[in-house]
Length: 111
Length: 114
Image (cartoon, rainbow over all chains, first blue to last red; front, side, top):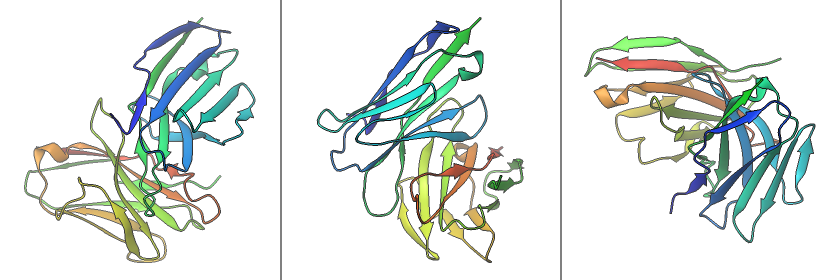
């Protein structure tokens, strides 16, 4: 099983749609979880941290299910500018700040 | 807004040559990282650095690689004898004491080994 696994994508959605990304992780001791976005040939940019209670930032909602080792990201009212690759990121709590990135899910939002 | 910077943006080198990639992390950050991303593949962790020493490294980070914080601002990645398969984008990242895992990335250095 891969350490961090994401929906393969790509997702093609119209503007205004709601889209959900899923991610699973293999190390049950993992403590910190994040979503990053990466535009083509650019650096990853932190989108949001994922907390146990779930958290929301505008149109974005992240949730964590520790029992199922599952993380999700929901984007409401998609904009053209949301087109990017969304990366699920996990810190497996090895004590040394190792960070594991998923392969990413590509999102295309079309007018 | 403070940002991580990296130089050069693109480095072309011949196989067997040494390269040094440079990064200036955000000034009050204490944790530093290097990643690589081979074209079309996922971002891969190389090494984390804290308190002037490596805190963790991946299997990729073998004896050909080294990191250094030579002064209060720069953070470097050295590849001693480059191979064709070292061709990739190399990203530097940093994070603060309070939010250790919330990492801010530089724009990357594209390394091409010929």
